[in-house]
Length: 161
Image (cartoon, rainbow, N blue to C red):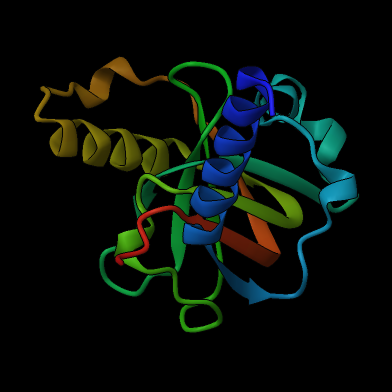
């Protein structure tokens, strides 16, 4: 057997072993990968995606510490993310999911905040980031988008041996 063929065979076997270590945690209904769309595409024109189910994919950068009722997925665009939120207890996302990849199928929701809600949200974010915040600097209410999922898959690459 030629040397190149042996190397290719070894690499292929290693990839199969790595994939075997990954475990998928599924919540709710099956994820529809046919509806997969980049988070950056959704966030560029979110109102275009309010009426039909979509599937998003990203690295989990945040998980609700109290009830596991939401996760934040990093976008393919730097410094952008999208939260997925379920009713408390409907799906419980584990804190250990952070850093893993997730796919979520669901409906995008538009939440129009009042000026007071916007100020409280931004104050909370600033406090969490350890930054100062001046509520008088906010003069316009904000709009928040989040995905209400029917199905979520977490690809757990941290399976212990």
